Length: 250
Ligand SMILES: Nc1nc2c(c(=O)[nH]1)N[C@H]1C(S)=C(S)[C@@H](COP(=O)(O)O)O[C@H]1N2
Ligand SMILES: [Mo]
Image 1 (cartoon, protein in one colour):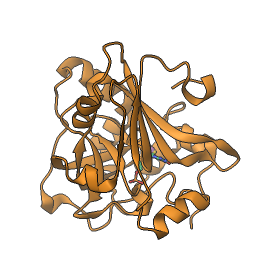
Image 2 (tube, helix red, strand yellow):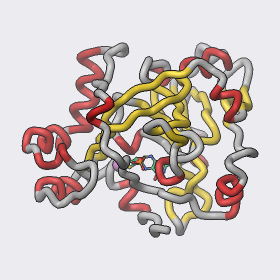
Image 3 (cartoon, helix red, strand yellow):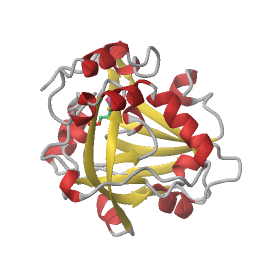
Image 4 (cartoon, protein in one colour):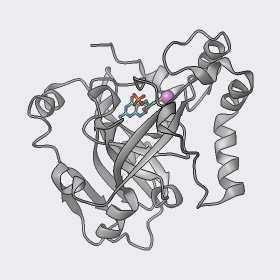
């Protein structure tokens, strides 16, 4: 089991974006899904990835689609990053029972909160998409994801008009020292209802492996790697971030 990354490493993506990762990418020092890092233009793109992804958003609008790829472009292994095995007994038990007791909750500002088993999710209409994951640490990887559109779940739950964001709650800790803060992420309603925003149980034709977020992880394809929360157990609809993370926000 790989040690979990320290807090600052996980969070550096959001703050000092790209110092360490880009140096590594520029040096071409990455193995695995790294084709992009050997391409100067691509490195430039990654360098301004956050700004770029936001401005593309603004220019192309809420319906713009992320690029999709062909099956031939999928490498044999999808690289893993961040948590690769949540620590603690609770998750270990879920793994050993094949996630039989796992449930997904959809709650918050909705008329009809949901609690769903994996079988119920898998019986819903699904979408399959081959997309490229871009981590701001300087690597990219193409993979095929299958899951239910988040919009389908939000429509079932009936989102209240005052809803502004969707918060994803994960089963892993933000860092080993702080056992109370679990990984979480949020997106606005444009991304939440986007065509390519799915909660995926399959990667490259197989159940999502533990290192990639089993049993369910979000794919929000217009967003960067850190906004692809793994190990999901709860989707919460909110109108503000005040109450999220004990008041520390989104
Ligand atoms: N729950 C959770 N989600 C997470 C992370 C994490 O550590 N925990 N890491 C993020 C980062 S920085 C990246 S690049 C991707 C990595 O996904 P992968 O392991 O499938 O490559 O997951 C994102 N989602
Ligand atoms: Mo990342």
